[in-house]
Image (tube, rainbow, N blue to C red):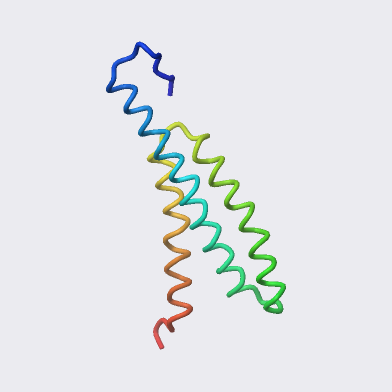
Amino acid sequence: MPRPTSTGAPGARLAHALDVASRTILAAAGGYVAAALTAAGFARWLPIPRVEAVMTGMLVSFAVYAVVAIFAFAVARAARVWFWTSAYCVPLGVALYLSMHGAGA
């Protein structure tokens, strides 16, 4: 998306500012949520000793956070980034919730 010039219309400048704000919120909050869910999933589901599972989950979560933050600003449309981050987080969050609260028991 081309950057509006300082002489651009106020509506275009506002749209650009909202786009950057949306991407920033996604990079910070969405990256945190994705990383936290990843760490919890690894800690819960890896078939290795608990301490090692937690450490593995934490290490992987740093990479997930970085990928979401980079992805937030690398993709052309912010809506696509929100969709893919949600597509990653929602099923993982639902699976974690069900595994902790006894789905179907």
